[in-house]
Image (cartoon, rainbow, N blue to C red; front, side, top):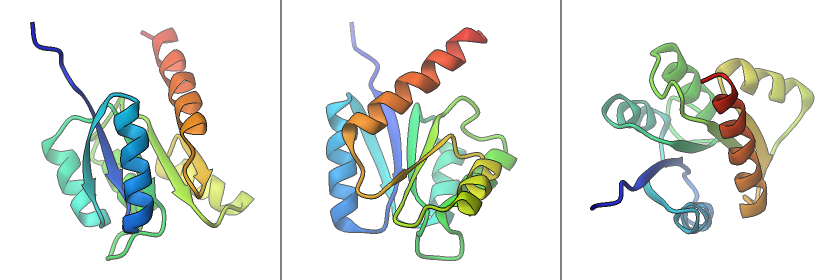
Length: 131
């Protein structure tokens, strides 16, 4: 019997940060789709199902990470997909804006495996309570 691979999405424009995030997601058992722009992220969500996603807030292009997530949520794509964000700039105002965009949790860079795994487990537990 073939095991279904869990699929993660990564939107990160820094090659170094992308490599680190892919390593973390792979070690968690995820196959990773990756892009560097918000526009591509929206398109990839249109055509794929993801179990988990991480967005860099400061993506290059017309859509920042939080704008791409907001569009994904508005289009009702990735309905049950936890979307986390990473950024170097965290403030109370920005955290509220990211939450309004549909981001489930925000982490400061650099990305850390223990933080991602704990937040993912917390999200899944909360979803399971309502199912």
